[in-house]
Length: 440
Image 1 (cartoon, rainbow, N blue to C red):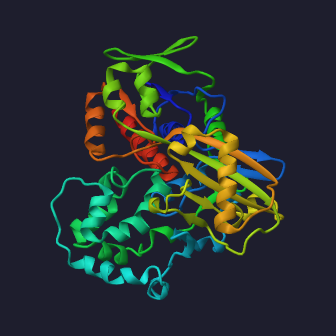
Image 2: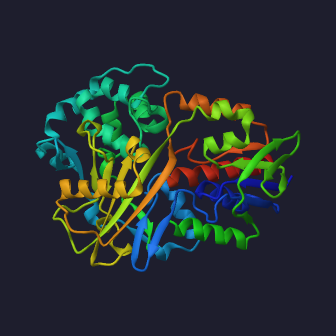
């Protein structure tokens, strides 16, 4: 039993292949099946001369699970290409009543912030809120219960839409923010847990990392290393169907069929449902959302407002989720004479708009909130269709049910199930590879 097929050449599939090669004591015949002509999945970097736009994730954080990502970077010999976010990126903003307000990055700035000062009593009163033995609840219900509707609307809502592209009224706390539930249960209070772990402000936490040539450098280097180790990567090979037999699995592609002893699917849930219809009903219960990233570059510095960017609460009734000031975050990724921004747009606005309309929408927002009126030097629109899985209420139980109904030689990976971030994907790839090696 030495054959492994991995469906999906994104960071989850590639990292699973990497750790299988690294941990196995015997030779493995590993194949990665990718429907596109490139690796990386949602990690994609657009480059044109000295211009760089990230079309997907902008980086990863080196703390927590990110330590494993850093280890992978070292294994691949990419340490010298690693860059860290500029100190300017510590400053972040929220749109409130049509104006940008700086997010406090410490206790003193919290006490002196006109927008956040009214919440101080609520934040510290949370320590006295009793625990309630709830198996799972929505993010919105949790923050209403332990804090207030105002904190939910102003702080948590934009944070959730910025990370997950979703609705806190629907998303599961235990799946999206498991640490907060742990703080309540183990320390009696979210605030106690945040103070004890130095995580008071989730919007200004540990620095962001990327690469000089963009985040796509990571999956490209990983795929090249894997191919050098004998891993087969099949490009332009969409999976048509999966046939599970007693002791093997057959993967049917458009031009061939491959047999394997172990199958790992790192496909999005809906893609897996198409080629494995026996599990389609359960897989299709996992919702996902579409987001657009409109990247814009201007000649020269266009605004005095500098920092990481800003998030937009839903109650502002704007057409965007937020804006990242890319040239402030990673100045090393582009020409010094260009200012780069990415405007994130979600929901129905993406589905009903053409690309040119999305650009116009983004330009209007930059004019309104940053005062930028100059004609852009360059623009690029990336639409990530159903790219962000939604871990809605009951997500953990749904995942357990799916896992329990899979054949013993069939495993899942990917952000559709085990976390959205690059760190989540790599960390789970390592965990899964460890599990598979023990079984073989």
